[in-house]
Length: 286
Image 1 (cartoon, one colour):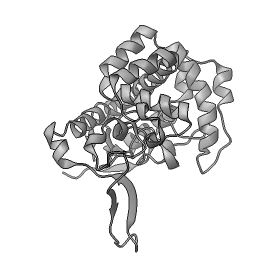
Image 2: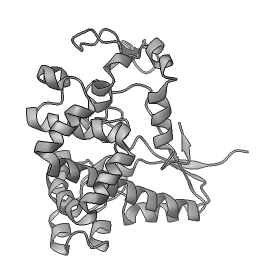
Image 3: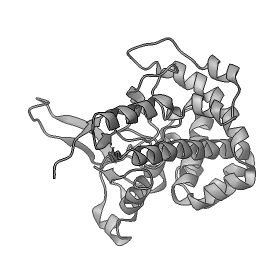
Image 4: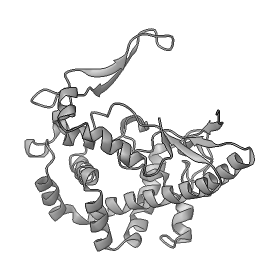
C-alpha cells in the first residue's frame, strides 16, 4: 500500500532563533501533516554537523545536533529564564546564520545543561551510552584544546582513542565534558518528546543515515583500524561517485572507505550500533 509523506529537515522549520528546532513550530508542522492526511515526515540526518554545517559531514555518527534544541522548550521546562531566551533571538532570514546561531545558542545551552541533570545522572547517561559518547566527548574536548578538528594534527598521545585517554581528559576537563553530555541528553529528550507527539497523531518519522563517515569525526578517530588509512592516519582511498547526469566530472566526497574485512571480524558492529541508535528515535531509516 502506498503512503504519502513530506521531506522537510528540522533546521528548515520557521524559527525566531536562526535555525529550526524541536520546539513549537515542529509540533505545528506535525499538526499540518495530520490535517492533510500525511503518514510520514522525512528528515535529513540529525547528527552534529562538522565542516560546512552539513548533516552528511558530522563530527559523530551518533551524537545529535545540539543546535536543534528548542530555546522555547528550555524556557517552558524552567531550564533558562525569559531574558536568556529573548537574547538568543535573531532577525528573520531565508538562510541560517550559523556563526550567530552557534554563538548565541552555546551560551543558552551551557546554562540549560547546568540546570538539567545532576552530576550523578549525567555520569549514568554517559555510561549507558559509553560506546559512542565517550569517544565523542573526548574528541570534542581535544578539538577545543587544539583549535582544530583534524585529529591527524593532534599530538601522538592523542591520535588514538582509549578509555584511559577519556579518563585522563575527564580529570582535567570534567565539568566541560559533563556539560556536553548533558546537552546531548537534552537534545535526545526534546527529540523523543516530538516523536511521541508525532506518533500520537498517526505520523511516522523517516530518517537518513549516510553510508560513509566524515574523516574529521570521533568515529573515524576512535576506529581507525576499520578504515583505509595508512599507519599515520592518512586517507589512502576515499569515497565519491563517477560522472553522472547530476555531475559531469563526478564527485569526490573525501570520506575514508571501510576495510570490509576488518568490519566483518566483529560482525559489522559499527554499522549495527549506528542503526540501533538511529532507531531509538526514528520509525523508519533510509
